Image (cartoon, rainbow over all chains, first blue to last red; front, side, top):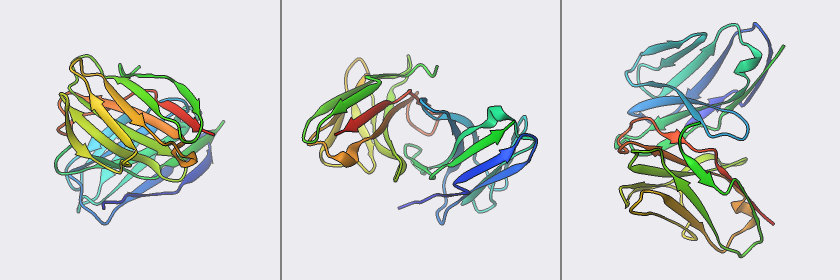
Length: 111
Length: 113
């Protein structure tokens, strides 16, 4: 069974601070995805990383895929209250039809 | 709005009962996925259908079953419900189911009393 561990589980920071969320696995995934979920809604895809060592930027969010394609990180610069939510990483199996989700990081950014 | 619709939004029922959750995928999407999200287990993949056929199975209990109909909508049937089945159930859809983006619906919140 492929497992993804996210850390930290909870994070409460002040507006303007930087933060990093980690997603680690002992398994290799064909790609790794990051989602954001708000209360009462389904997860929304933020980014997909495919190549080992890949770095993708989405405004103040930077996503990195580890060289061995087993781990990933999400870095947010100058966090804003609008970044508050549940961040989920998910690994896609080789067949491309099964997502394994991490436990999630619940982020709260206080103004 | 992802374009995926799920009904009902909330469902309260008793142990031992059976319920049916419904999902309509985005227009043009052939693949439907079901997920369960609970506090202790997180978000878990249950099952995938592609154009009416079961494509992949995850951690789906034998008491649970699903199907995808010719009009591509899908239903998840949960029977002999237990307290531990209380969770959010999400449906997602994608074009063909080969690794492209999955779009999630708003979920059905099931409470088993």
